[in-house]
Image (cartoon, rainbow, N blue to C red; front, side):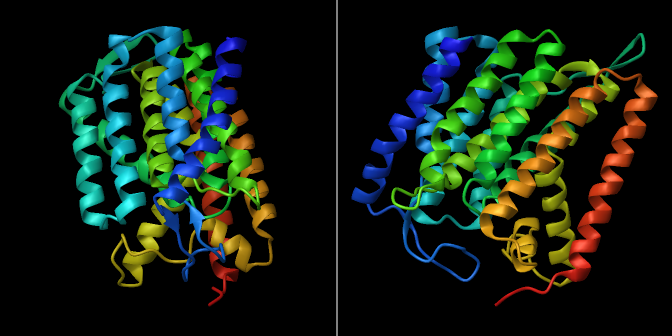
Length: 335
């Protein structure tokens, strides 16, 4: 496993150097704007390096596993949709349509939540697997995409979540899924130095955030919820609690203010932290720490009896909602 992860880390780091040059050559840049924190144009599309690394590593070390075909096809289409957005700034409705097509095809190829178990019983959720799987894949993809607002935020949170999902998958006896999750983490970490660099800065872009979000959602299905205990299904939600609830609050906030849910604003958690006086780096670090804590809680919850795991989940959600409410009460957006 060490060789796979080392290869993925180095491959992503080196590829990112060449990808940045290509992005500059073709003028694929993110320009400063009202909601954006950077002050000059930055190459956007670092997700190319992450995507190529993950696919290349999995093919070299695993070969083409037909069990993962839904993941491969869906992730590839999601990456391509994100890349088009990086290049042409695709309108939200068309991006959503592209995401729906990618998810629909992935589900058609077998990427679905099919069963849940509780104690000694197994329940086939039947037709409910379609809306449940669709909403999960769409929700997590856009959750990671929406927190991509500060250097290293979506990539770092995604890497932490990938590692945690890998640990949970190992506990469930799904070794191949665990290794794939660790490869995703290594590829993302290999890119992050370029994201944090001042001199050689590059953004992961929609190509990266959409690929990362879809991959996390898909791996949680393959590694945890495909045939998992009902309470174990709560683990991915806890692991990805920050982006999931940040997205839910964004939808509620925009609807309450009479705005279209796809119209961006400065109400996300990372914006609020910066507006409250955090530096960008401290805001990102704070969210990292919270994500790590949630990851530990998620892993711990899979070892608990069902009732205890549900209680822990409710407590965790209540704390997130309370903190978010307190931040919203104190938040005064900066123009």
